[in-house]
Length: 128
Image (cartoon, rainbow, N blue to C red; front, top):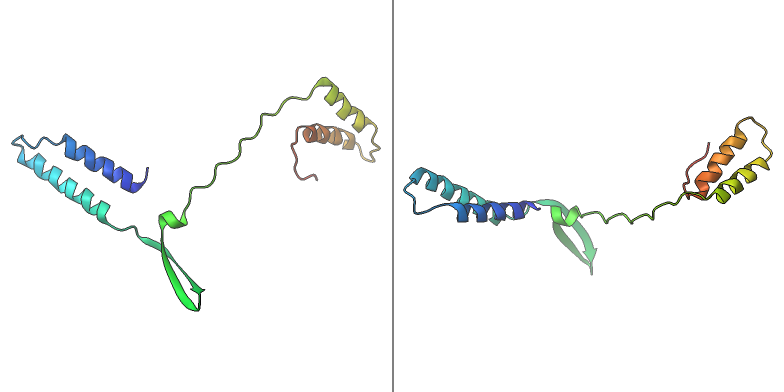
């Protein structure tokens, strides 16, 4: 909810919940003060957070921007499809490919096996 929506909701609740027929002058006065304060807050223009200036047709154009203009909601991230586990055949293919590699250092073949499985799952990243 935006600030204005919250203020409108509070104003509506206060206006409808106050019993104006009761002889409780203190409560009525507080309610009237709160209603006046909410209406005043709603009437306030949004503060300018940035001014944009540019040239257009040989003239200087200036536009005042409010928070709504500057801070937009980010677009939702695309939904990633669920990853499926590798089949036994796909795992054997990854391990067979690693076994056929020539590796100069101990442990390189194991790293290749792990990277082959990650690649089969479309999981990438920087290698060291």
